[in-house]
Length: 85
Image (cartoon, rainbow, N blue to C red; front, top):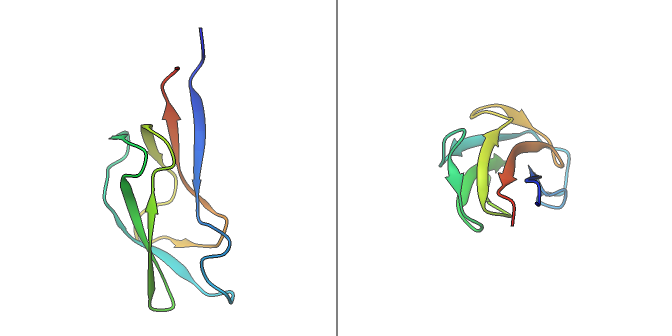
């Protein structure tokens, strides 16, 4: 029997050039929600540029960084636990 896997949802390190403050402006799904691969999860704002973060896998979302919280490139903002295959 396969065990479930936990996948990190991280801010890509190449989203913006300089070291600037970024913030999660909106979570489109709630903690513990079921999400599908490709679902829009959150919107991040850095230096007047908005980025959309999508689910890399299907599973159950666990939010790590909350709305209006400052974040950096590479930060894990959530995890998704996928069901066993």
